[in-house]
Image (cartoon, rainbow, N blue to C red; front, top):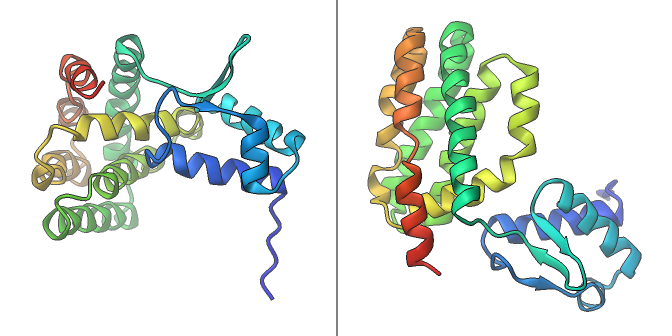
Length: 217
């Protein structure tokens, strides 16, 4: 028998996190504790603890006199996330180019190849492609060898996944993986400067993200 060692609070947080990141709950959507507790067959205190966990991850917010809501990204949020991505991912790519072992390079190329194959086989699966995009960048941060950078990146990882979904809404998904090729090649070649430049170039300009956000409101 497989025993689930997670607490009910952790299971509830995982359930909600998955639905929010995958776009199954709308940005700004109101969450009613009592309704959610009934749907999940949990106590309101357990649900509240799960929501508090997600609030620390930036996925939900508690508004005075209005209760809990799914986070939403406005133009200022996109500007901030864009600049965080540039700072973290560009530097991570340069550090990965310096630090990557042969095993790391093989792992990066394997993830990149899976990403390419997904774009060819399932070009309309936006969520799956966005996830593959995030997984590749997440791996680069890991390969950078910086525990502090990895920790900081983890703190905004869920919002970054939502951010990536927005950037993919008006993009030719068949080209999503290919746009990362020069960056992966630079990292594997140990070219720190080019890796930094290619990582920055790979990030969609914030003006395009803001327009995409407006078009989908």
